[in-house]
Image (cartoon, rainbow, N blue to C red; front, top):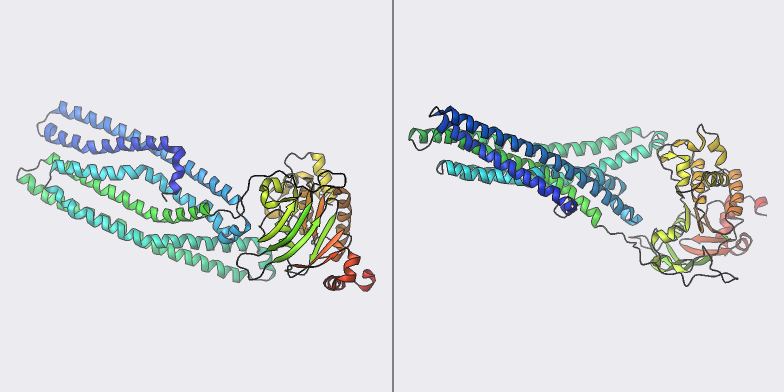
Length: 583
């Protein structure tokens, strides 16, 4: 919690103003009972009306200034807390943007969403109260004790018993509540995860008639969270009645012993009234502290979870960019743009017993199409993910334009690449916005051209608003093949040096697939193209086909060469094509 509060540095002057205003309000509240005591003991007892009006006027002035300070302090504390929440959310968001896929796997998407929204809100709510109470409550309590002692030291001995009892109750309940608040946040993560899976997988759930199963999963997670929340609220609910009981018995004791002291002429009526008000201020300041103890444990748990995100450093970091002095050159001596080289690459996923890729060495030149094929789990997509540096290799090197990708900044590297993922991802907005995602300043002509090459132009223009048609969240209002074509158009409009197609034609029919590959040939003549595919028909015409088997290259060459020398490739071909097609 304290570590997270360092984010308040930009608001230090506003915080100082709030503390000053709360101080002035507290001093005013402490001064009012003394003025009231003077009115009773000097004004009412002696029937001195001018004195009553005079001190009454002072009381109104003090109360008015205190109320003004309270309003202004509330306004600025709310602004500070809202600003803190805004800055912290932005900081967490920007930090998470730098995470590698490994960090996302460690924390989980549902947990990251909860931490960025619910957890920061919890801290923000407590911060608003802290700014008002962290100085106001202690000052009211300490000031109230001092003023009460000044009114009657002997009667103040009541607080020697009362205050330790209240503080002990607050600490006991706070210690029991903190572990439960931590558990609540974890169970909230689980509920969000179940809900997220249900909403994103609703088609699969309905197709397999698993609605009842999902209802049970949600009910279980919901009940678990509810039961823990009820348990912690029961504990916290016991605090207020306990405080009120102690307060009421304290009032009885004060009135009883105060009455005796008045009867003995050791205490005046006005002083007893002031003493009661100071006792109330002390009790209410402890109630405010107890309210903080209700909220602080949950905020502390949330702060720990936020710090866990901010403290998690991405494994992949940007070095200082190096000049591409070692860049590959063509026959004319000019540097090749988009030259890809794998040099004895070995890569393992965290916790894996065996490498996902081992001994991978090949090169891909501009103007060439390099296809990667292999069985499920052979490492095709993993190999492609190493080029944009989604993961770092364990040993060996991946080079782009002759420079190791680990020696380039991620921005410098990825601006050279047009990546089309295995699972097409579209964003809410228009079709034009989604294509322009690859190049922000793309003109309308460039967008239309990219759509035509990607074979998306016909279905886009057939839509009601054409390129201004809205895409639903996750691309729910377009088919899988249409999503893939729009993803390809997004990469084409970028005009990168390297195209990475990660099984990006899987949802296309054979006719559209053939037309798209033919259009891509003319569009990518100066770029390096790497295609991961399951279909043999997609890769047959590639300049180079790499056959992967269990993370290793089992064959490399053209279709004809591999048919002669690679048994694995022949098995893949024979499983997909008839003997006439193979011939």
